[in-house]
Length: 97
Image (cartoon, one colour):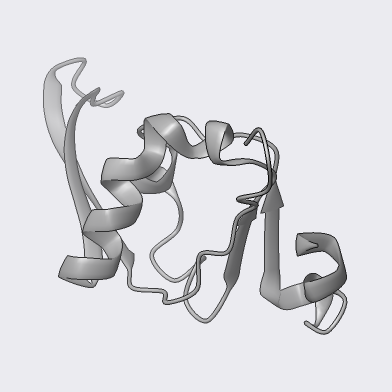
């Protein structure tokens, strides 16, 4: 049913995935999901990412700060990444899913 619905959407507006890890959305480009449809094949495929998806919808953005190595100095520093709000999250809820 999801595939049939997505046929009505421009392909460039659809981000279709089989699975999504818990932190994956935190590292997307700032506007890479803005005005996009995130389509995940089955509910099982988003279990790890449920927190990120709910937070993105509620807070209108995801923000993560992670430790990274500064290749110039060789020291560990922090990097912040922000991903802006998007609104549509269809996924299959059929029997057995």
